[in-house]
Length: 317
Image (cartoon, rainbow, N blue to C red; front, top):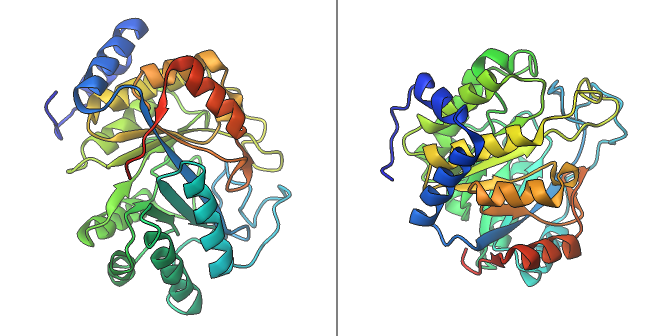
């Protein structure tokens, strides 16, 4: 399947809305053309700075605006991060991701400390990803020089629905950071969240934004909302899991070369739904008991699921 960057919303809507079994079948065909169908990359995500974020993202328990039981913590030490990365590598991870609850990265001691973390993880011959909020061109360049593989900066949802979820940062701010990351030669990790109360059309709109990036994001994480009491979306209606499958399958067809990451919210999925997601083209997960501050399946659960589905962990970064 040829890579395209000129998808229209109408084309994406048609793909997203086609009969589900046909959609999953075509997504699996596209997946097999560019990937080993049974391989899944394992990633570990570590919160290096938890809580106290000034943003008002309606889904996030790390916002200082909400009483969601997450306290404001200090930046982790270099040794804590190094040890966590070494454990992750020993458990099969080939990608190590570090997240800080910042609106934007600010120059100074903390940012210099993060650069040291990036160098330490890169020295383990792992892929290194960070999500630190908005960046300047100079910060992106410095991260690249330190050995950063990828930068995560999700769009979350469609441009039309975005203002219902976040008011403290514009959609254009996110796109601008992604441009700076790309200019610095860092791979882009960019996806979104389903289950925010958005419509099918909003999911189409999100995929339209991602699929028109040239090049496509190398990594496309698809997250399911983890409802946390105390956040505005803590009582959101539960997502139809087949909407997640449709989103993943459509992402695979639009961006066939990307890693499509089945990310947050896996604890809410049945084994059967997870199996459909892998069939639809997901080929990466985050493992470990926690994703930033929200729960994740236990390692033995993932191992059993992989065994039953005949999936293997990729050993290539």
